[in-house]
Every structure is written in structure tokens, then in C-alpha cells.
Length: 119
Image 1: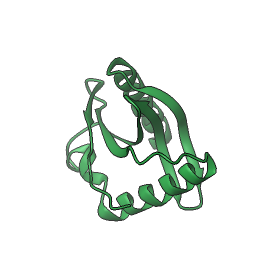
Image 2: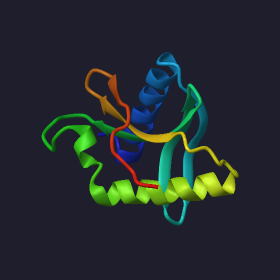
Image 3: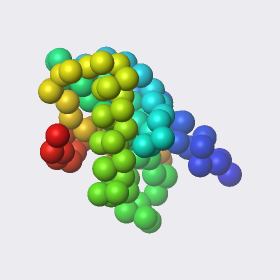
Image 4: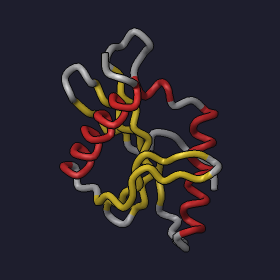
């Protein structure tokens, strides 16, 4: 049996390929700070995209994107603020996307503007 970390890495690899194919430019992977972690930070058409990757090998626990709860969204937002401050990025053009990965068929769906943020 494959461990959760390996499944997560596989999911992120599938997600990165899907994002690049869709025109995203990957800036950073696995940005960590005390507020949380952002799986992928990318740029597309001048917009900074903070991307959460969720992968599942079955739907018994629901769709992958359903795991991005309000609590998780708040952590992502807090980590995004830290990233913007650390990198001195002043852009107002940012959004939060989710890449939902089905590990059984290695397909990824990109959910753009997956949740709203007030900043």
C-alpha cells in the first residue's frame, strides 16, 4: 500500500502538469510558514494564484475539493498574506484555485476562483 505522502506527491505532480498545460507559470511549490502551507503558487495572465491540490484515490470520502473547508481556506489566506509580504508583492490581482485530482485515472480538474476572499 502506498503511504499518504507518496499519494500527495503524485497528486501534486499531476496537478503541476495540468496547470502548466493550462498556461500557468509555476513560481513556487510547497511554501510553508507558521500559518500553513500553500501547495503551489503560480502566475497566469498577471494574476498570482494560490493553489491547493487535493487528490483522492476513491470518492468514498467525497470529491477531493470538498476537503477544502472554511478552516482550510482561512489558513490558505493567512499563508498567502505571509507569502505576499515576504516576497514584497503588492498585486491586488490574486485568486485561490483548487486542483482536484482523481488518482485512479490520473485526471486533474482546475477549479479557478474556488473560493472568495475579502482582502
